[in-house]
Amino acid sequence: MSRTRCDRTPAWAQLREHFDTQGRQLDLRQAFASDPQRFERLSLQAPHVFADLSKNLTDAGTQAALTVLARQCGVEEHREALFAGDHVNRTEDRAAMHWLLRQPAGGMPGQPEGVRTALAEVHAVLDAMLAYAQAVREDAAITDVVNIGIGGSDLGPQMAVLALDEFVDQRKRYHFVSSVDGHELSAVLRRVRPESTLFLVASKSFTTLETMTNARSARAWFTAHGGRDIARHFCALTSNVQAAAAFGIRTTFGFWDWVGGRCSMWSAIGLPIAVAIGPQRFRELLAGAYAMDQHFRTAPLETNLPVQLALLDLWYRNFHGFTSRSVAPYHSGLRRMQAYLQQLEMESNGKRVDETGAPLPYATSPVIWGEPAANGQHAYFQMLHQGSDVIPVEFIAVRKVAHGLAEHHHKLLANGLAQAQALMLGQQDAGGHRQMLGNRPSTFLVLDELSPASLGALIALYEHRVFAAAALWGINSFDQWGVELGKALAQAIEPRLVSGDVAGLDASTAGLLQRLRPGP
Image (cartoon, rainbow, N blue to C red; front, side):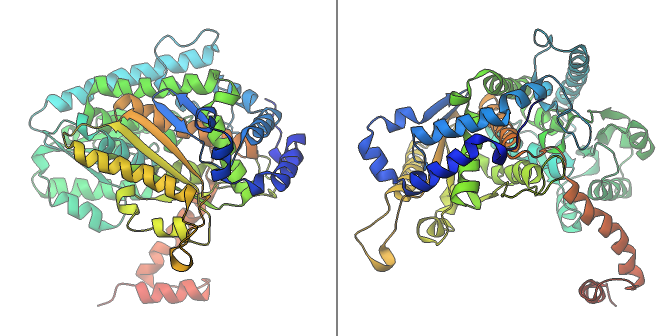
């Protein structure tokens, strides 16, 4: 597997010269005026997702130079290693085969035997999980499904169930509990009954502190309120079958160490999605993601949407110095998209060292933030237009909707189009407080409809974008060592909240601990 860090390629120096002489001065208004075909030249169609890249601070020369960089970094070779099942997660010595979770049975020609074996296991679990999901859907006695998980075991399923509300079985209610803050679980338990609730406990190791604390409290509530059959009302999404059995759970669906949490919604972790939208729709979700996998794997770099978006991320982060990206979906169903993308992108690529452990001389992941844009326009869009920082915006719009309120949708789309236009054009002649400089970049992603297939393709697009950006930056997307330190320290601090012992703590932590200790 051949990889070269971006700053160690000949293209890097050439890009720096290009930026200093041309890229820094690019004006979008002039670019459109001088090239009537700019929209057509800088738009890409991938499975289920159309991308207008024309309002970004690039031109044909910039894109060509960036694509040369991708080749010199070995993005194509690294991509092949990913799909061959190689251990691209080098720091943990693991493969990263989340893409295999949506591959059709039978596999692809020429796949290594180990990958084909893993695929057979994937489909065995998938078939069993979907059969269970259908049984739950048909069980009229179950009216509420409570998913207990955190991180990838919560963000993906919750985002997808909300996004696909049009397809959700409305005879049941779906709840998601992630925080160890007892207010969250208590609020859910007030709305459900033991005899009609199914709890899904999602933890690969069945040891995750927040998840297991919530699971034990849910079990205690269940038995205290007359619940009699833990095996019927609790299901585990875990690889630790013994621990689940000791808990009282008999139904478990597992997954593998090559499934990272933030790419796990395609696995057994997706059970709440499958219960909500049904087995057939869940397979459509997988099929949409698989279509994007094939695009990422086979499309030339010049027309490869995940790669071109990753190159744009590098261009903005390392040359323009933009520190964040705002994601603005113009569809209420995508209201948890930003939270999902925060984990996918920032936990994956929020790294300051390369895969060998060497410090990087450049920045990596931008901060991802945003809000469903109809509300965002009345909240933070002021800063996007007139703030001192230039913040690229990623609009997501859907052409067709399920409701019959056509006037609503026309107004929504008009606002999205207008905001992107206003960011680019600005308002030069008003002066003072009314002046907007414009020339602020944006990307516009369009789905024909928000369906299981298109959502699957959109999420897979983001997964591959993150992977391609990591290949450019020379980092490992698939570990998260920074997450572990806080967890370890929390385990040491928790008993001190009871004992009051502050020996050896820094003065700030000691003072705060004493102030936060429960008192009389």
